[in-house]
Length: 293
Ligand code: DGL
Image 1 (tube, rainbow, N blue to C red):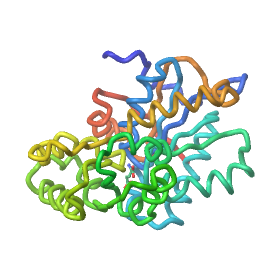
Image 2: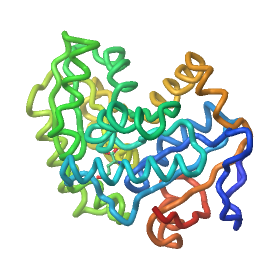
Image 3: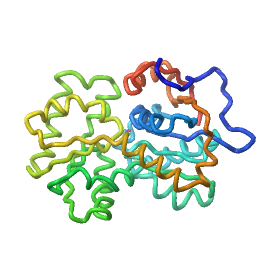
Image 4: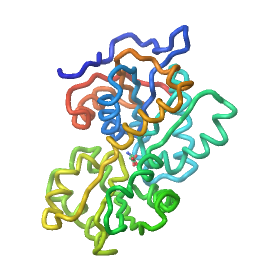
């Protein structure tokens, strides 16, 4: 085991301590956020984290704004009960469909001193560094694509960039069911990739705008091996660097985050199923606990 973090213990008590210090919460509808958490802990190895996958209600990708908002809010409230002052929505769909309402309407009422951050803003802030042609492709869930969050946010930072989107509704179910490495899956992956690239041959940067998709990185690299000008970007490292920067700029939040290595993994669904599938995203075995929302 090459991680400095202790895995989950049998102790069901939250991390909350008397000085009001708490872990940083990292959330996803299921397993995808683990690809982001993995990068975050490399950057912040001395902090304490708590991960929640809402597997019982995943996937979120095809659900309505209203539903994603209510599901996400209930998970954010759960993190607050665990003593978190900072929660990262490591899920593009939740960031696209729920974050703004939670930040603007809910937090001022329920927890004015706590913060909830997403993954779209940090990604759009830096996307211009990757493209030379100013043509960027976004691959995401239907929810993320239909929200238009990426084109809108990219236009704020890089108005010169043209954004092309492709919804990939089959990718998360294939990944969550560990069925992404077979010829049946290849059909959907190749089809979505082609649809995106057909929109403009000058696209030189593809953003994997779903935290599940890094598991397809090898396959996508193979499929694009004859187009070496294409860069395929995943978000983990970008979000992790942005979080470090955020904590440096916000000492009032940083001082509420417990600096004591440790991670606990929670799922709203069956823990043995989670342990088995999450290990693929996490890269090594983990032990999860059941979260009751
Ligand atoms: N991992 C989530 C995202 O980044 C999507 C998964 C889902 O559809 O639930 O969008």
